[in-house]
Length: 253
Image (cartoon, rainbow, N blue to C red; front, side, top):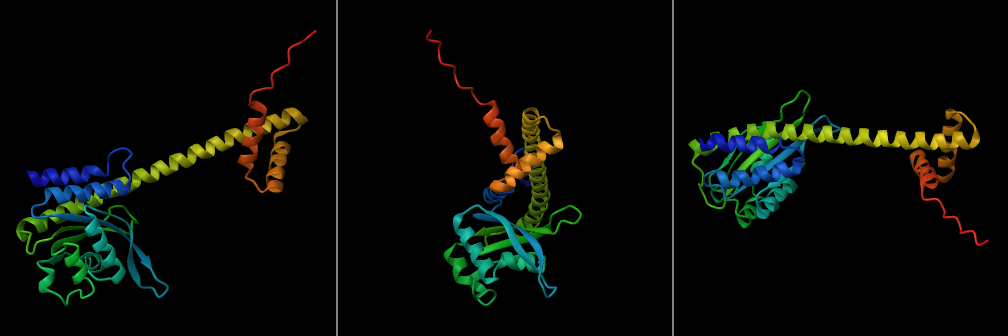
C-alpha cells in the first residue's frame, strides 16, 4: 500500500495548479529520498534529444531536481565528464544499478572519486519517456545512497520503475500547464496592447479629425523616429491625455 501511495503522491506533484517544472522536480526528489527504503538522496532529470550536424543524437539536460546539494554536484560532474549512472541510463535507455561504486572503479573512472566524495556509493537509475506525441523528452529517476548495497533489488528496482513512470506523466502535465500559462499570459499582453493602441488612435482621431488608419500610421511614424515600439508610444500618449489635469488658479478678483 505504501508503494502505491508514494507513486500517487509523486504523480500528483506536477498536476497541482501553479506548479512549475522546477518545483515539481525538487518535490519529487525529496519525496523519493524520504519514501524509498535505503535511499538517502534522489535525483530526477529531464533530458531532451538533440540532433548534431553529423546526424548523431545526444541528450541534453533541460532541468533537474536533486534532494541534496552533494548529489546535485555529483550529477553536474557526471554531465561534464559524460560518465556515471545517470548519463549511462539515458544514453542506453535502460536501468543502471550500482551495488558499490568502489567495487567497480573502472566502470566510470572519471566519476568514481567524485561519487565517493558526494556520498554516492550505490544507486538505481531508470529512464522513462514523457508521454505525448512528438515529445522528445526523457526523464531519469535515480535513488542513491551513501552506503554500499543499500537497496533491496527485488523491492526497490520495480518501485523505482513505477516512480519513474508516474513522474514522467506528472512532469508532462506540469509542462502542459506551463505552456497554457504562457499562452494565456501572451494573449493577455496582446489584448492589453491592442486596447491601449485603440485608445491612442482614438485620441489622435479626435484631435486631428482623421480616420483609424491615418491615426495608426501617425503612431507608427513616431515609434520609428524614436526607435520605440508602437505600443509604448501609445501608452505614453494615453498617459499624457488621461492623467490628472492641472488645477486652475483661484480667481483673485
